[in-house]
Image 1 (cartoon, rainbow, N blue to C red):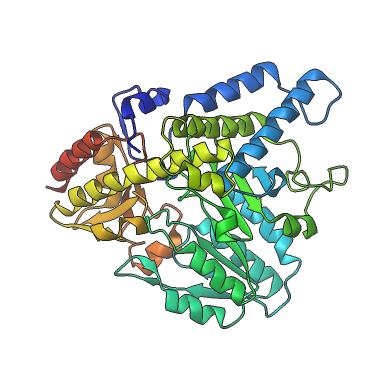
Image 2 (cartoon, helix red, strand yellow):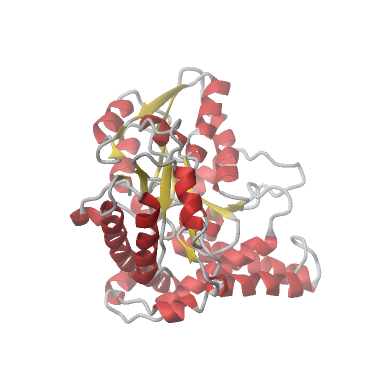
Length: 419
């Protein structure tokens, strides 16, 4: 499945400028179908929920379709298993509060030092308020991977909740989420996965993973600033939602408090329609197997799109790692073995010996190449690596609309900055 990058880049109006966007781990550029959906919603269906008139009914139709499309993207069983909200952080804070009602003093909650703080701080606050214990799972600082022995050791203490990421937003490491979920379930824990960093890079199947909750944000996969949460229907149905009294008690609405960002949710639908368009460009290499697995037409196209992106982004990872490793004084944190690229997404973080990460990012930015610096909210990772006081790392994150030529230009600039 090869990508036609010229056609793809035409779907992103923001790319039509003299800049190279390698800041994607903090938010990708938005696809034209998403922009079109936002514009169409605001012009033609802008109304509040459940009104007895045309624009409200059409608005509800768009929102329902967005839930269904997001369910297909994650291979959820039902559209009602999808909750929309401001972002992953807000959704996690919301659902953690509901889950906390079922915890007692002395219960254990598992978190990892690999995670973005959005999947750590909410559980820290729950632990403090409910007098629970926080179990920290360490990372292998040489490999940039989760310490599976430490994970297993933490599970011996029978945590009620195990929170971990699908992929690190700083190191790019992809965790073995199927294995981790089974281990956690065998220990009696509910599993909450942060998939924000993985969602733009590979297919997600919540039924295959068997996680209880999974959260992501559409501004990381070519849509607007909006978040989505998957939860198993029975669990969501049983949980008490913090909401106002007139709000619905049914799913998904009991967790979608107040008036939602309707145009943003319409934009999520548009982002998924872009991915559906992308998947439709490819033939039927694995189509029969996926159809036998129960994939509908939209699910099939989404699966093909994400699989094609994943294959191309392996090339980007290979090239980017090689470029950075060729620069004297550069040190990459995370998986660098080119035979293990399936264990990472193309998000690569590194330091330059004797150079301040902020100054490096600023110098690269002055050449119209956009990269990030600092801890990027992966506070626990940076603290564990001893890099917080030194300013963290430089983070470079291509996605499927970036080209190999753009990485070459980044390499040229990086070598100049490193001198």
